[in-house]
Figure 1 (spheres, helix red, strand yellow):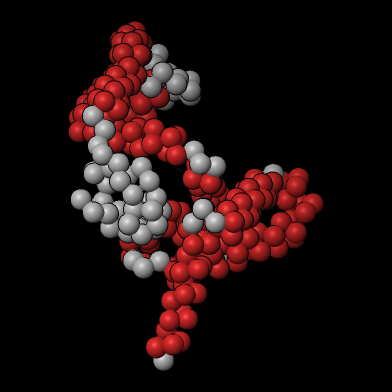
Figure 2: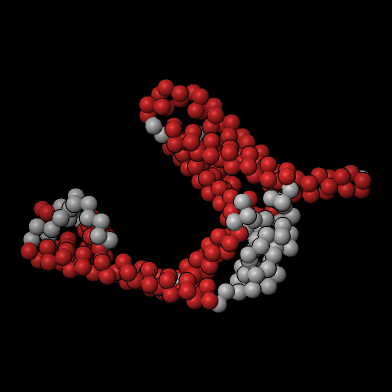
Length: 275
């Protein structure tokens, strides 16, 4: 029994190196084949959304789609089989992406359009950074993520302020313009305020009264100023983060690099990182 357990562990270790590793020929070949599969699946999903192609090659697209779903399902099961901390992997970034790659296909039996969401599998192409030894770019992306995390309190206050402005202006426009000018309710007026303050301006609803036009003009001017606020906040935190970046360390399980002291789990294999 112990001998069988030893063989089973050796098989797991070998599969782990192939599936999660990129330093061996087998691991690189697996990742390259996976990338080709993801790209092919994404192209099929995009093609299937075109009515002419769907009507002409619909059956072939469905067969190929399920072929890729089966491949991704097998890969997901293998990943769960070889990782030591399955719960951590399930909750990791790539673990969630792997699940979302197959879940919409099965939910498509009940909601047909949701099957197109399997294209989120294309996010696995982020592994190109590790396969092509582009670790420096991964380090820069980690700086950006830390800057966004540090900006969260300020961005939250900013968003609540914007929400307050939208609610107030939307309510005012509902009273001033009314249903006769397209402002049928406060939610619709709030929608108009969002479109206006973001300077998108669809033009499906527009004020007709002088006061309404004045408020609209002021809101658009405010919108231009508002666009610069989150940019300044994130730029400041990004500069601060780059200057005061934490000490790098490696994952003790898969030896992935470019982790900092703020991170708790490895996004690649889900292992708990030492503080």
